[in-house]
Structures are given as C-alpha cells and as structure tokens.
Length: 258
Image (tube, rainbow, N blue to C red; front, side, top):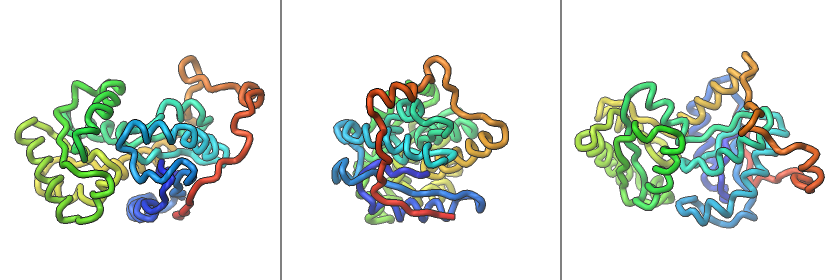
C-alpha cells in the first residue's frame, strides 16, 4: 500500500501513475489516502498538520496490516510517525521515503544533500536524519522557496529551481549524491541526474523499491518486524480492553494497480 497521508485524494492519481511506471510486473499496489475527516490539508509542511493526522495514520497502518499487505509506504518525506506505525504494523513492513532515500544514496556515495521546498522544512528533516544516525553523511540542505502544492504546477520552473539548488549543493557543499526532499518532486530526477552526472534519488521511487524488496525478503526468508523490547507492540488484550481499533478504518480513496 502506498498511503498518501492527507485527507486529500487529488494527489492519488499522480502517485498511481508513478507506481504504474516503476513497479515490478508482479507487484500489486493500492494507492490510498486518509479519511477526509482529518481535514482538507493538501500538505504536511507544518508540525501542526502532522499532529492532526497521527490518529488516522496509526489506524490506517493497522487496517493495512489487517488486510494482509506485505508493506505500507507512508508517502511523505517527513516520515511522519514512522516508529509509531511500525509498532502497530504486525507482520507488515512500514517504509518511509526519507529513510529509504538515504539508504539508497549511501549505497552510491558518501555524502548527500537534500533539496527541499522551503527553509521551514529543514529543522524537522535535520532532526529526523540525526535520529536515523546519518547526520555525518549529510552535506547540506538546499531550498527552492516552493510549497508542496507548487511542485507540479509548472514543470519548467520546478525543474530549473531544483537543478540550480542541486548544482550549488554539488559545487559549494561537495555533495556526491542528491536526494529530492519531497514525494511531489517526482518526475525531475532524470534531467538533473543527466546534467550533474551524479545519483539523484527520487524519494517516491526509492520508497517503492525498498517496499518491494522488503516484501520479497519477508516472503522468502521470513524477515518481518521484530516484536522484542523496544519493538514490542501493544497486546491484543489491551487493545480490546481499551476499545481501540474497534472499527475498520475507511480510507478516503483507493486506486488498485495490478
């Protein structure tokens, strides 16, 4: 499942097309969005918006696990509530774009830069990267002064801004690879990569490929989430006692890609 973690379905067709172009032929992916009850935010640029989706994101993760998905992708580069989602995911893998992109970048280089929309994003993303243990591999953040909703409006403008920021990251910050720091920066990595001659990681594709690999490893080698110590999940007895997850979660939208 590729979960668009807002209650706003207009991006779903966009993500579905991305997945259709890049998934393995034998992978089935459901593109979903949260219930409209979370609000009409079309982005998670602010911590306030992140906080408001928390309950629905956890319920959606639980529902995806109940439906038998091998993996779920939380489709936002902030990787919102990743640890919390992993805790309640059962045997299902939880994949997130920031973590996935860094893991790919560090297979190809020693130092990466992240191209973000606005300076506002840097503090939260920097905190996440430090928490993952990758701070020493971060060359820089470069912002293009664009909001999430602007990335897909004028592709020429977006491409030029991303390319300019990436060039500065390479030439001034000595980045050896570039990560595009928003899932809606999809569709621009090829041109930038061809011009700069270094790896440019698209976070949506990185997350999709990490999810497919995780599903394969789970099914072939039974490598599924640990439930020991810090990974322990709430007991089913407690969940029943506290009357949590008593109803199936209703997604706002669902597109099935075979």
